[in-house]
Image 1 (cartoon, rainbow, N blue to C red):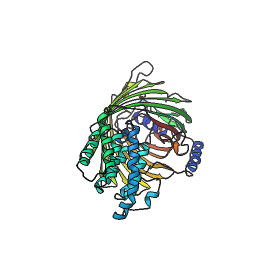
Image 2: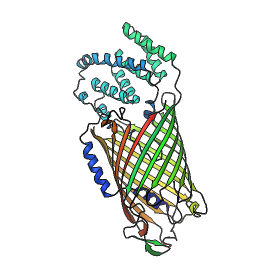
Image 3: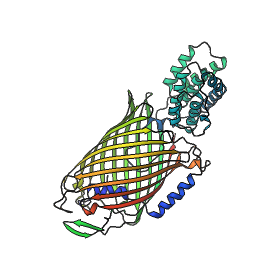
Length: 516
């Protein structure tokens, strides 16, 4: 969190960050790029989830076991076993489908999404192809969940069990694998070939040393074009010590940034994982230098489940070296969680405690006036409308208590609504967020007899696409993503300084690499 002097209030800085982007000509480029995407076919089933949609800025990371499982070591022998199990399943699938009446033409679609699985949970053909599809992408958690459900529906099918076993071995999940092996040993209807495969998997588990840590490198670059980077008011006037002056800050600017992070993840039992992440971001503003900085972050997180609750407590420490401002430090801890209700609804919630400070030095002798303790609460709801559309609703409340109350202490109320489209050619999200800010005391450096109060409406449109869908030889695993976004911020306030409009356009590339 960056700190400004007394004249640069807490909320102004926050809204400024939202407005540091795009001009009209890049937005036309965005439309042209959108039309290009419409000519392609997406192979990745983006409709189910978007955990691979990365953002290069340093913030609260999403700690999710789904992302981590795909980085466990894969052994060539086990991949061969998995392929054999798939082939056996394909041979018997027509017979099972005829007996149970589960056949469908839906599975002929290459891009099977999780929403289709929710709508057809008993369709053997569809579910098997979805499991194969997810396995090839490295999303083994989805593969396992699908195969476990099929195993419950068809408990006598040996091929499904062997396929599930082969995947569990690949991701180094010995406890689940050994449980299935012991159950299968009690069966008397196994063929000699199946017994040999079972023995081979068991020997592999016995010989393998357990994996402890997985190391992942996340990288990204971005460029942002802004038409009102300085949050200049609509009248180009501002109040300063109860006097009206001209707003002389720059409006048009461009910012480039790059980021990398290293994550170490270790499984804890079958349902939990522990994360350590170090991240670094550099930002370079081309005209002015307000957004030139180097930031460093260290995160500790734990992802686990308790009943139907998925919980993620975390601890984050960060340092920001600003070129034109005091160095800033922050300490944050909190917890996030979510749970599902039925097949289409999920609810999320969270709490965060933040202690932010800035250096008091000769270049900025008022920076520490904005040192603050903050509390934040969030509540969200996600709903799957159909195979194409999903929605997200968010509520938030935060309270900041600073060293110097005037112009810094504020309460913020947030509401947001997003509509997501899982098109065959890309994942597109349109969102509208509303923020109401009430400051507790008047800032005499601006207006001495009026406490600031403002409302900001932010509209954004974002698109994500895997480069591998265009150029498979460059990105065969479809792990390099291009992200395009447009944002418009309209702020209305009782003080003219914060009554402004801004828009931005950004383009970024992000990629995750497994190092072991």
